[in-house]
Image (cartoon, rainbow, N blue to C red; front, side, top):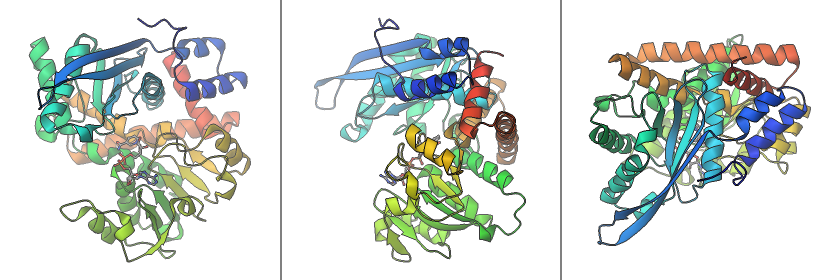
Length: 412
Ligand code: NAD
C-alpha cells in the first residue's frame, strides 16, 4: 500500500499546477483534488518464458481521477515505465478527457519490459497476466484501457479475451483500440493527427491559398506521417519531416506521397536517412526552421531553454506529448509564438476512443464520415472555448486549457 505522502508523482505536472495556482488561475480546492492520484495499482507477477524459466513482470495502473466518469488511458510496454511516468500520464489524461468534454476520468497503465526481448507467446502471457492482476479494477464503467507505446490492436484482443473469460461477460467496451473486426472504430488509426489537422484548418480558415503556409513536422510515425499527408492534400507546403535517423528538407515543399511510399511502401519500414530526393538536415535544424507551423510529433522535451531562442515558427501544434519544457514555454510566450497545447492538439485519439466505447455499448458501428464529423465538432468546440477563455483572461492557450479542464473536473 502507498500512502499519499510516501510517493512523489507527477513532478512536471505538479509544477505546472502549482504555477497556475500561484498565478491565481485556479484555487486551493482545485489544487487539492489534483495533487494525488485516486488509485495506484502495482503488481509483480510471474510468467513462464518459452525456455521454461520464470520471469517476474512489473506492472502499474493508475486511476488519477474519476469525477467525470470511468478512467480512460492506454497501457504502454517500455523498459523505462515507472510509477512517476504512469501517474504523470494518467494526470494528463484526466485533463485531456475533461477539456474535450468526454464522460471519462483519466488513467494510464504500464508494463516495465522491452517488448523486443519477448516472443509473441510470451507477450500474450504478459498481456493476459496484466488483466488477471488488475481485473476487478477494470470495466466499461470503472476504468477503460487502450493501446499506447508498443501496444497494438492484437494485444488489446488478448486482453479483452482474458477479461471476458474471467468475468464471464461478453463486452467489447472493456478496452478501446481494437481491430475493426473485434469491435474497433473506423478512423481510430488516424484520429490523433486528424484532430490536430481540424484545429489547423480552423485556425487558418481565412487563408485561401494554403501553399503560402510552410510546415515542418518532427516525427514521421503514426501521428506525424498522417499529419503530413493531410496537410499536403489540403495544399499546405510541408518543407521538412524527420524520424530518429535524420530530417529531410525542401524549401519549395517535399513530395509527401513519395516520402510516405519510401518509408512505408515496402515490406520493411525504411529510415529517412536513405531518402535521396531531398536535402538532409538535422532534427535540431528542423525545429529551428523559419516556418508558419511547427508540429513536434515525436518525443517530449525537444524545445528547451537551450534551443528556444532559435525557434522561428509562428505557431507550434503539439502533436507529441510535452515537447516543450516549462522554461522554454516562458520564452515562447515572450516571443509571442503561439503554442496549441498537447492537451488539445492530440486529443483526437482519445475522442475516437470514446466513440469506440460508445459504439460498443450501443452495439453500433459508425461510418468513417460519421466518426470524422463528430471528431471535428468536438475538437473545434473545445478549441473555440480555449481561445475564448485565453482571450478574455489574457492567458496562454495552455493555461486556458488547464483552467477549463480543472474546473470541469471540479464541476464548477
Ligand atoms: P511513432 O512511434 O509511430 O512515431 C514516432 C516518430 O518519431 C518516428 O518517426 C520516430 O522515428 C520519430 N523519432 C523518435 N525519436 C526521435 C528523435 N530523437 N528525433 C526525431 N524523431 C524521432 O509514435 P506516434 O504514435 O506517432 O506518437 C508520436 C507522439 O505523439 C508521441 O509523443 C505520442 O505520445 C504522441 N501521441 C500519439 C498518439 C497516437 O494516437 N499515436 C496520441 C496522443 C499523443
